[in-house]
Image (cartoon, rainbow, N blue to C red; front, side, top):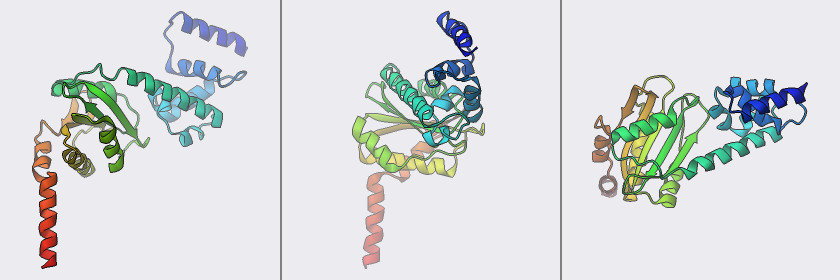
Length: 244
């Protein structure tokens, strides 16, 4: 029975028939399970992670908790995810972001439909060409955290002319939280000390609900108050007063 079903699925794929997400995942899992019905496992993965993007972005330790998914299958999925990431990286450099509308449309295309909160850092050259996409997620619906050393490593590795930051809110509300403000301040200071431009930080909640730190003037306020030289001067003054 399984062989006949698999042949029919392969025929649909070969003839470019419109396949559902669970069917595509089911076909991929044929290679992981030689003689097993992969349909229930495909459905279980999508039920747990919501979308194909969620499945291939899932953490290994969460994948192995899904019924029917063991170590080998989890590693197989992670391998496909890594291939997907590297193929996508080949297209970096095609996108050119010269104004806010370009960035907004790019952000919408990147973050629409994500099942968890994701933060992305885009490195740009002096002509606005995207030279690197760095994506982070904790596989959490409500938060994503990126340590300062990761940001510093991106700047040191890619040496961008400028940086754009984008992340999503699954709440449907794009207004920044206190943590969003703190992160934007942190990445601005790191950019400032490395002579890199921080152009904007956008928060995507829906196609019609996108917050821009640049357009609202919030980024300018951060830049006015947290320039590296100003921070050093304030700190030096504090230490001098303490010493007296």
